[in-house]
Image (cartoon, rainbow, N blue to C red; front, side, top):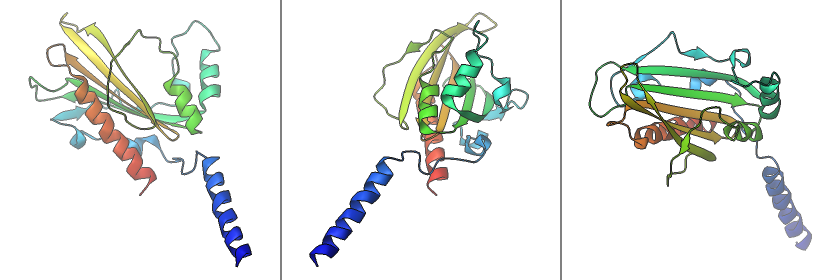
Length: 201
């Protein structure tokens, strides 16, 4: 009886160690397109801007770096497989909703690769926004002010997060008087739920 108990305990211990040493279990292997939010998921009447949306293969990436090896280094460190992005435009203007929304999903070979991508230095100088919410395994919330073509002041709030071997991103572009980080955070939360439901049906 004692041997049986010891055997059962060893089996449980080895099983838990195996799971702990393999954090990349249940990685996503499908197309990133299937992970994205659609216009009906957004809090208003938005139109998909098809000319700007679509697949973002590795060959299309621009690192905006003077180093010719920058893209090669990024792909090697992150193991990026494929990406997709959807651009949406508000078609019924309001005084509360973002004028434009960018939704992105990228698949990497491993969770470590996705984390490396999240931590990759940005070319744009973006300001980190303090935030109490946690989305996914790790996340960042940043903002950057800019001027629209009519010279009005706008703000881009951007949430990026990882979940296993996935990186999700939401950017909201709004006039300064309308812009709030909560819009980007709420949509990022919705995107994270999409990731979770897809990987854990």
